[in-house]
Length: 246
Image (cartoon, rainbow, N blue to C red; front, side, top):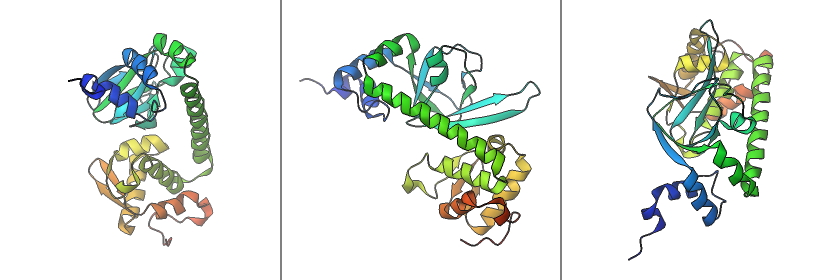
């Protein structure tokens, strides 16, 4: 008796269900499956480092990947956490230049890896996928513009609230109250302040019941309260522990 496609090739089922490839027809999926390799990384493992050749595209199947940069003095900044359903490595893939950041497994993760030599001929025959890449690049530009705006125009509470809301948006709405993995040191590297300043603000929100702090993770309990802080002008916010009502 003939077996189902998913039994013959479970990787094809993964590609078919992934949001980035879900619109491809069966023939295109078969072709993509021949190009794609699946790799698993343990938490903390290096995916690539800044300066590496940009010869492949990465798609997250499960887990999360941390994108970061570091100075020669040892200071580091986390640019983004890429999670299930997202794509990374597209900049160097498209322009053929070196990687612009380090990619490290933030959690145990599984990635789809597609070589540049295979990807370009493939995407030329797939206009729908090409449009997705255009949308992806536009989203990256918008996101970068927003981050610059937050750093220049917002104070710490608003920047931190925006970050937590952004991290929470990578999870299902039903996951409200469920902790996501991120340390206070990592949060500090995302918003550009010390861990001590982050700890002070998070504890103030924890006392209000807006968030719950756990070792190495945070749970958002009242996202609407954080949204108010994220949208507030600096002059309307007091120091951590103020009486802002939500």
